[in-house]
Length: 121
View 1 (spheres, rainbow, N blue to C red):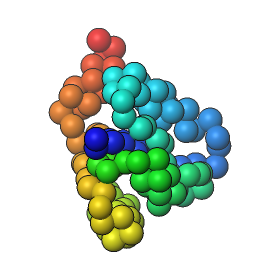
View 2 (view 1 turned 60 degrees about the vertical axis):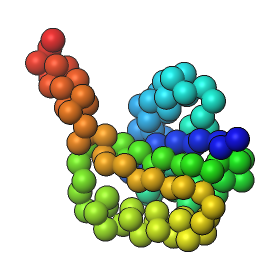
View 3 (view 1 turned 120 degrees about the vertical axis):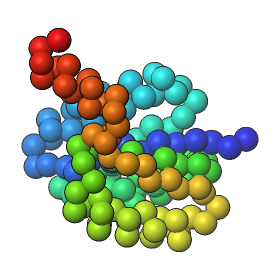
View 4 (view 1 turned 135 degrees about the vertical axis):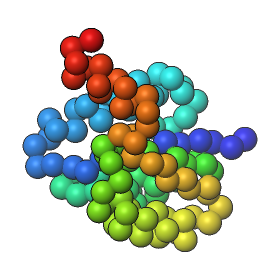
């Protein structure tokens, strides 16, 4: 049986409370996909790192892993830094399908939800 995993990937910050929205999203993803491993990972300043989260997911049996950047746009980190990290993970785990999707802020549903919130709707 193929075990699926999702890593929600956020920037990170010095303030531990900054990660709370990402953890709330992770809890909701886990509710929607109860048979899937769901983890939050960070680019910097917080743990686990993306490499650590991928390692833990694969060690727990993941054979298909989806990395979801919790970023508003495909900025510098997602264009330059993250592809390098993902390629390193793929090289380390060739038997695991590792997919990097677009930043959540690029999704039309997310844009509409943010617009509705901003408009007070």
